[in-house]
Length: 276
Image (cartoon, rainbow, N blue to C red):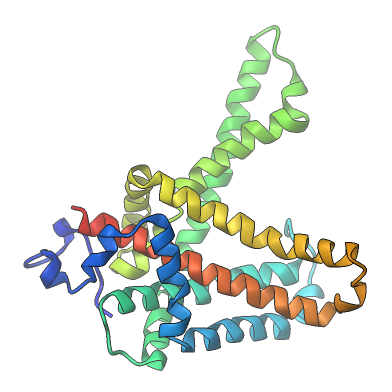
């Protein structure tokens, strides 16, 4: 897999032919990007092995994680799966998408090893995004407290219920949205974390509808199994909801959905490069 970088960061010719990227990418709609990503499992079956690897590691580490203090907003076991998905699975999915669009002949094993070299940079990016989101909430808290103190008709009730969620949730969501594609840019373009964050800020502005579709897709992927479980229980099929089995099925479903959405996000970045 060759890194695909923006024209100003590339030596030599940057035409479509020299970039060896499938030019059909530019003509695809959002639905076309999703369909292409779904077909990635048919074109590259080894991606299922990586999915099973992440799920298997999650199950192995789950008892150990659950024995640790629960200091996360979610269960520690769930946090372990999220970390593995956001790092190991994401780096491979982005690398596979980039290689597939280049018609690369690199073996699955070699691609996996190569992709994991981006892990440190991806971890730095994710920590930076979390820090930026927390910083946005802190700044919002300071500014809102200044408004409470100086404006007579504004009271501390703005920190209660829906108003607090709207205020602070919007600030953190904006930060996460603007930096959403930074890991994809880092991996597909071989950029350093700071450059990837900067490029993500500009790319998400140009392709905000496509990025929004990806984020909504993540939310739908997370909630669909829960809705499915409720529907099965309501239909009298509680006996099907055996915890170990449903847990494994859920993690596999999540992982497959994440691979698809990581692939769509990668296509957004690559499209931004080809549209220059």
